[in-house]
Image (cartoon, rainbow, N blue to C red; front, side, top):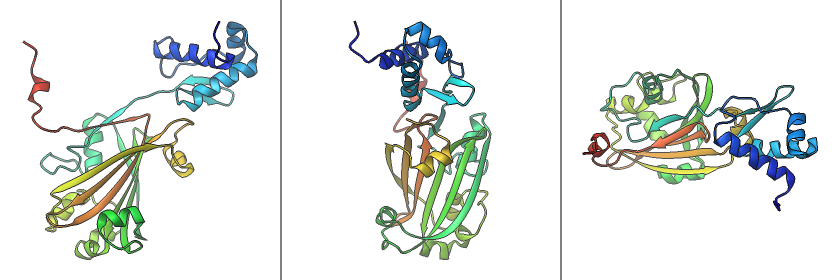
Length: 256
């Protein structure tokens, strides 16, 4: 006999059935009363088991509609090619990647003059609180919130490239715009981490309980100094990031 509390037994059984495809993504789970009868458990016990699956991001609940298995249509981002000007672009890198994947990009945008947060100042090698231009994007894939992106540029660079501080998007992408102005990004340093979202992030990305966010911080450099720090916050359940490093020919070759 299982020593697990009954609500965990309910959650474990349903999790196995979700994993094996008995209840595929988007499908409706049986009602609380049906599950009560199946597991010989009270509705409160069943509700606690379902609540555990909700906090784990496996199930969503809606008032009057019951419980549904979460949909996970993952978007895969190639971080090695992102912003690589040697690849043809349809506008900025985000629009290019989403369009090339057969998906539909959409974003809202704002520009602010902001003091540099401490973690950003350290990466831009400026004094904390010094003036930066913040270009902030709220990005969607097929109308589903995908990420937020906050890019900080030091004040000296905005003086040399004034479109950075103008409201509205830069159609060709900021990396290409800066290169055309003589400020070429020749390298970047990436930092990737995960955590649970803040309330503001949860609202912006429409993530349910139990779903973490993926933080991708990229600092871009010219040959002699940093020129920007970008913090992208992804929904952890709908995104996968990959890199291509070195010779990739072995991936394409058929086994002999």
